Each structure stands twice: as structure tokens, then as C-alpha cells.
Amino acid sequence: MELRKQLLKEHSKENTNIIVSHILDNPALVDELMDIFLNESYRLIQRSAWVVGEVGRASPQLIKPFIPQMIANLKKEDIHVAAKRNTMRFFQEVEINEEYWGELLDVALTFLGSNEEPVAVKVFSMTVAYHIVKQVPELKEELTIIIEDQLPYGSAGFKNRGQKIISALNKL
Image (cartoon, rainbow, N blue to C red; front, top):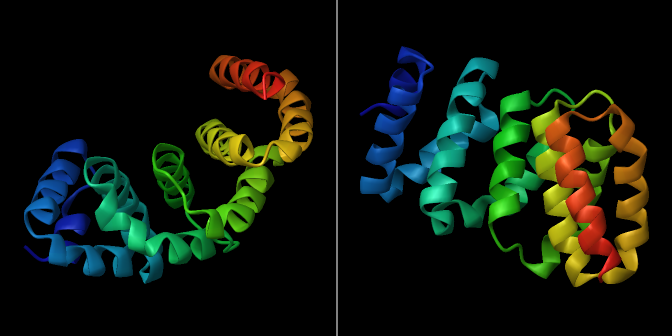
């Protein structure tokens, strides 16, 4: 399977599942997938983001070596929202090494505090930030303030997650 061709074929759950299965059966293709995700055209980045997220959930060890590049990618101004959403979803579900906490927390708090980010990116960012702050409790006030500032403008899902995280932060 040629990944680029398959990604461009169609943007659907069925096609994503086909690609994910193929990559899981052929882990050597992860390098090519991540090259597409981090460096290709807007459309290919968008389509590969879903695949990266699904591969990351199914087999996190395949994606973890790319954490530094993924964090750097999140800092780009023109990054596709699908890349943000799937990257932050991956980060909320895996254990992140301490060496990346500072940089990733900065990104997560920036997304969380932005009025421009979609709800999913903000919610995943909130969870990523919480997982880091659990390890560095002296930062809990900063996270609490940002969440409280965003609550009045959040969706029902954002408010629910925000209230749960604030409650958990109060217990730290």
C-alpha cells in the first residue's frame, strides 16, 4: 500500500481503519506516516492526523518516539486543527516523560486559554495539562484559573470536564 495514495483516496472511517490496520501489521511504515503527518501538504496532514491518532491509541509505542517532533509541530502557526486535535488526544492518553512536561504544558495552556481553538482541542489540552500538573502540583493554581476563565464560554462537555478537573485539582 502506498500511504499517500491511500490517504488521498478518501477521508472516511473505513479508509482510516484500512490504513491503521496496514500500519499495525507493518510497523516500519510509521516513519513514513509521521513524515507525512509532520511535513506534507495541508490535505495529507489532515487525513494522516486521524491515522496517527488511531495508531497511537492502538499501539502508543509506535508513536512515542516522535513526541519531540509532535510538540514542535503543535507550535506551528498554520497547523491543521485535525493535527492539533489528534495530537492532543494522543497526549492525553499516554504517559509523557518528564523532559517534555514544560514544553507540552505551555502548548496545552495556550490552546486551553485561546478563544480561537475548537472545543475538542481545548478539552484534550485541559486533560494533558491536568496530567502534568498532577506531577507538579505547584502549577495547579495556574491551570485552575485558566479553566475557570474559560468555563462561562465552554460547551456542556467542556464545562463538565472543566468542573471535574477543578475538583481533582482542589484535592492535590
